[in-house]
Image (tube, rainbow, N blue to C red; front, side, top):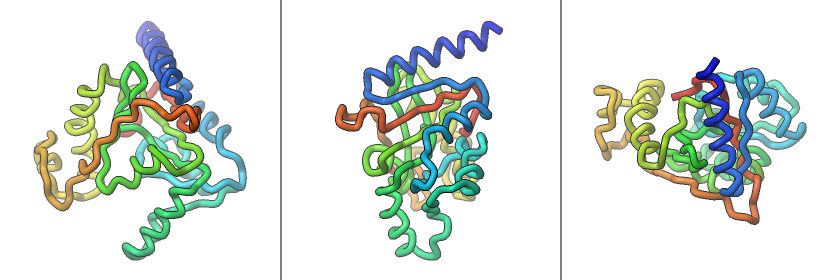
Length: 212
């Protein structure tokens, strides 16, 4: 009981931090509530795409949009690099971009690490709306803790999921590598969203453990 109440209080602290950074936050206790909330944001007939994220799959959002009345921009159908670039160019102009955050601070800052940069690029600019599904397991005290969390706790399982051979996939901790399979090429801290795009980024905090 008290653990759940503390989680709610922590979520409200984050939401207040997001507000002063021109981002919107909401707390959902369950994956089911988070799915319903996310779908309430997405207009039928709009274009929808996403970045690599276990969280959006775990709440059922991927299946929901693929089976719904939306224009899907799916990078996984690309057969080669040129087709991938073409799909990415469409993703930048999408109505909705779905993703998670690798970490989020108690004061509302977002920390994300990316391999190619396409995911963090769409977070910072491009799609009209960004909807983030973030489990409360990703909450950290500050940016420094967030980077440590991502490199040492999120990246190792991600490299294993992707079948990549990196130091972290063999040791379970960041090896600060520079190899071709490194997935930590870009480190982006979203301190705030510009006032002109206030509310573009919507974060759905979920009172469950999601993703890595």
